[in-house]
Length: 140
Image (cartoon, rainbow, N blue to C red; front, side, top):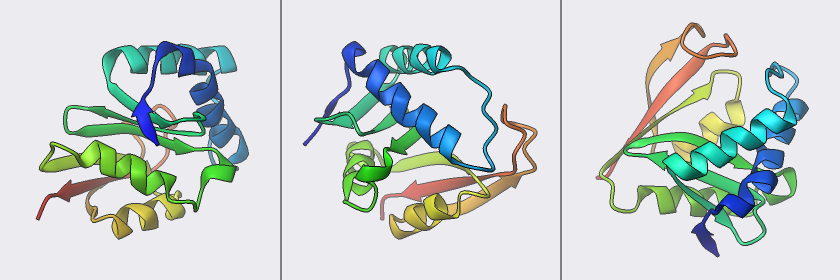
């Protein structure tokens, strides 16, 4: 069951985000847990954010941009990511997002869901300074 995230979900969703950052060896840890929670609280206020009933995964959409899609390890490979992405595609003919070049699993996931690579940078446009890839999806 996918539902809109609320302010009371910020802590759990921040844990999903923060855990992913901390468990990913190539990802620098730039923010504290408290900053992660503040980021999620702000995202919930300024974007459309959806999560599952237990808040083990979430997606955010701002217009046609997807600034975040994260799942807890136990939620991966269960169809939740696809369900969240399907929710974000509703009422849209186009979506765009960025993922890190090193995140091969995410790049494969997005390709399976109809996204194509349209741009790359050397990391000068993200806080982490890591090479990234822009992916676009267009309704057929």
